[in-house]
Length: 463
Image 1 (cartoon, one colour):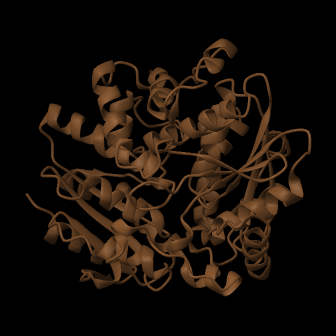
Image 2 (cartoon, helix red, strand yellow; image 1 turned 120 degrees about the vertical axis):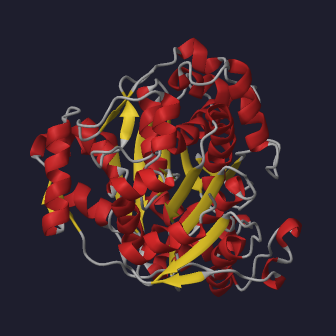
C-alpha cells in the first residue's frame, strides 16, 4: 500500500512513513494511492465481532507490510482497552430511525481518542524499531490536544507540544492539556484562534531546516492514520443496523472535515452509505462552500461548540483532491489561491462531485441550546453542543426510510456551562477525572509568531 500527496509533488510513501511524516513536504496531505474495498460478504462478516476485530479487518488492507498482523492486533488491543464501554462505540436510539453513535468513552471523553490512542501504540512500535526520536507538534481547537497528550505522555522517544487558542477552549478541555505532569508534554496557549494555531503548525512543517532539526511529526487530522482509525466506527455502527443489507446515513458535526472524510472512505470501501451530512455551527465555511461554490474565510466567531470554531478545514483538501479527479496540480493551485487571497471558487464539475457525496446544514447558537434542551426533555440524554449541532441538522435532513446515525463527538461534561444553560443540569465528569479541577496547571502563553513557537520547541525538547 502506497500513499501520495494531494498536491502531487511529494515522495510516495508507505503507511508507516506517511504516519510518521504527517504533512507532505509539498504542503499536501497523504492519501492512499488506491482505496481497498470490502465485499458485501466481508462487511456482513463483521456482525457480532468485537470492536477490536472489526478495526483489524477494516484497517488491515491500508497498512501493507508496515506492521505484522501480530503487531497490528496488539496495538489495536492496547489502544482500546482503557475505554469506558465494552462496545467502545455504542449506539443509542434518539427517535424512530435516528441513532446517536457515542464516541466519547475514551480516556479524554472525545472521538479523537479512537485515532490518537491507536497512533500512540503504532508510533511506539515504529520508533522502537528505528531508534528514532521525534517531536510531535499539534494544533487543537479543543479535543485533539488532550487526546494527543494522553496517548504520548511519558514516552522516552517523543516530545509533545500542543498549540491551542488562548481563552477559546472549555475549562475541561484546557485542564486536560495543562495538568499532565510528564516532562515530555507541553501545552502552549497561542494568542489567536484555531486557524492561527493550524497555520503556524503548517509553517513549522514547511520550514524544512527546523522540521529536520527537531524530527517534527504531526498527529493532527492531517495525519492519514488519524482518518483511517475513524473509518472503523462507520462500519461497526452500520453493521449493527443491518448493513450491508440495509443502507444507512450519517450526520457528522465537523470543523476540520477529518471525521466526515473518514465516512467518505468507508463509503468508497463498499459500506452502503446513503448520505453523508456535514453539520456546521456558525463558523460555516463548509456549508457555504457546498451551497455557493465559494470557499472563503469569514473570520472565526467564538461559539459554545468551540471544537468547530474553524474557518480553514484542512481535510477538505482531501475531498477536493477526489472531486478534481486526483489532480494534484489543480489542488495545489487552489491552496495557493487560498493562501494568497483568502478563498477560491470550486469548479462546477468538482462542486457537483462534492454535492453528489455530501449535503450540509448550519446551526446557530440559540438553535444549539434549544436542541440540547429538547433532546434531554424527549429522551433523558444529555448531549454536548457539538453533538447538538449534528442532531439538529440530522433531524432536518433524515429520511424516514433510512436509519440516520449522528456522531456524538464529545461527552457533555466537557462543556458543562452550555449544557447547564440549556437543561438546568450540570453534567459531571466520570469518577476517574473527578479531581481534574484540583490538579496544578502547566501552560506557556506564546504569541502568534512562528519564530517564537519554534524557539520554545527548540528550548524544551529533550535531546
